[in-house]
Length: 307
Length: 111
Image 1 (cartoon, one colour):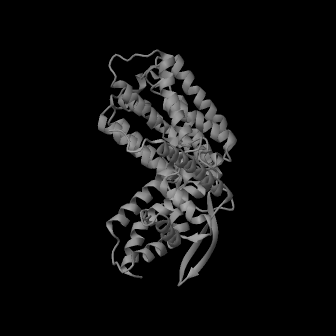
Image 2 (image 1 turned 135 degrees about the vertical axis):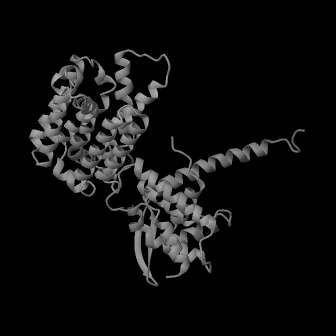
Image 3 (image 1 turned 45 degrees about the vertical axis):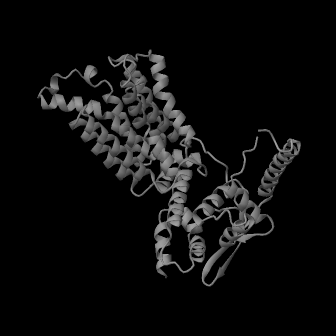
């Protein structure tokens, strides 16, 4: 292998894996043939290859070729685990009362009204791992409706419309996935390596950071980063279905960002309905636009498997 | 309404119109068709082929191994040919209009 070819191969490593597998060797052939007597790629070739790799990665991120049922199958496996990160606030309250040595006097209904729902979601996660899909689906619907009801009737009335919107939305999508998709068994085939373990670890770390660094900007940002990395790795960054499933799992991150954005606007106090639209609308639009829930792009004909 | 084809796309489709070609052949043919004005590079070519195959405009015709290397030939599909024909007609209409306007232009023009 010539030095020129070796350098071109290094550049081709930037391309999406499926593209490399399909076109890598012929691209090397073309590049070496066009390279003539050179020993290293010219800067125009380097720029052209880097730009091409970027465009193909971008295209794969936002365009077609994904079966929505596969995306939902991964969500059905990982959604119940991701939802558990929503228990951070309740766990912080619990930790505070434990630290104060006054756990027995804690007004549960006031401080952690949603605690029973997180127990339900923990049960759903266990049921999914134990392959009890039907029971898990029932639990997921109960957990989602419960989150809304608890938020509505407790002192945190309407929090489902903003602070809890991400968890309610993710819970609902998980319930849909458990009900309609091929299920967690199929999800396990499609997701990344040890998906339950990876996302479970990420959620534990994120919750721990959130509890210890409650309402501290750096800690909150660290929580989001851990959840993003955990969701992407667990769902499978190497597959289109995995990336789209990760997008669904990151709905609470989206709503957190919306909350942070709206907090920067002074004197912006929309009513509850507008608030709900602002928190639920954009994540759903993003999921639909980027193919998290529906396929995008032109379907490839089976006899033309070019990429 | 159909979007206008970008020049590299137009030239690649043109290169494949008469016969299937492999990647390096397309690069050289594009240069020849454009009288040396357009010199595509591999990154641009394969990004374009990826998109055109998604759109159903080109397809793999056959594969050969030459000197131990894979050589893949691409062909224009009927859909691709129709898209190229549409673009040619659009350009022809523009050219006709430009010719008519130029003929109508007063000799010497205006100051």
